[in-house]
Image 1: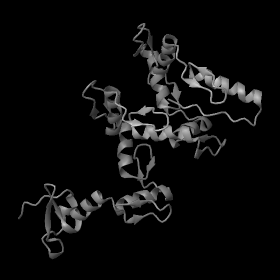
Image 2 (image 1 turned 30 degrees about the vertical axis):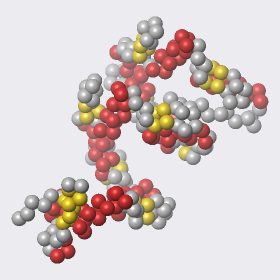
Image 3 (image 1 turned 90 degrees about the vertical axis):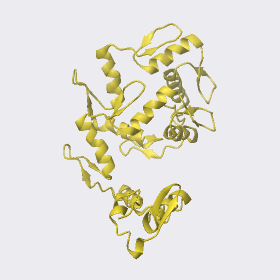
Image 4 (image 1 turned 45 degrees about the vertical axis):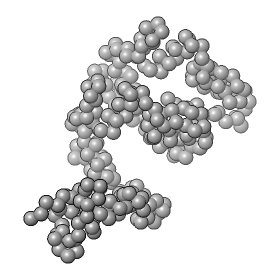
Amino acid sequence: MCSTTFSNKSHLKAPIHSKEKSQVRDINNKRYCVNADLRTFILTHTKVKYHVCDICNKRFTQPGNLMRHLLTHTKEKPYVCDTCYKGFSQKTHLSRHIWTHTKEKPHVCDICSKSFSQKYHLRQHLATHTKEKPYVCNICNKAFPRKSSLEHHLWTHSKERPHTCGECNKGFTVKSKLRLHLLTHTNEKPHVCDICSKGFSQKLHLRRHMLSHTKEKPHLCNLCSKEFTQKAHLRRHLATHTKEKPYACSKCNKNFSQKSDLRRHLYKRKVSCGPHVQEEAVEED
């Protein structure tokens, strides 16, 4: 017996004392088996990606990552939920989905004790406490707490909308917004209120609706102490104090304090100037 440790359980089960895997090295205070652990370590740190997708040429360091990626092209979903029979391309996605049935939320915020079913959602929530926004747009200097939010925001500058609805040809900057839009065609409302059974197409809308039952108004104006059920309502209210008009029409330079006013202005301009004038995108919060 020996005291060698491994980062992967499967490597422990492998015949490491054979000639094929007899060499063990210490790197960064960790022991790596030359033909398995060490190779994985080197690929991770050198960023070499030998495994290439034949369809889109995307590259991966590990063959397992390539195999998982290929499922996004084949649309195969071999992992099926026993409760609702929804399919998933990856086992980890199925595991996350199962939490929606069990209602378990094992990931708890140390600051406010709010719990989450997924660790990723907890990380997102923690940014609301720290107020850190390390990801900054190099065009308008707007800052975001998450890299994904910055990536979505950048599409508003490029005006590209690569995700198109097959029903009405409406374009969207991100795939998640397209998915939400598709529910307007199917009239699906999967998010149901436990109190009044009203259904909603989006989980965000259900959360807002729940406040009508609890009468909670968690968003407080620090200038006049007026309370609001929604953060968007608080933002609109703050404009009455600051007199700021952050929403500007790029065509006529007219400014508006509320996003809805800018949308109405753009619509009127589109009607008055004719159908050949395209309505510019107004970024969603």
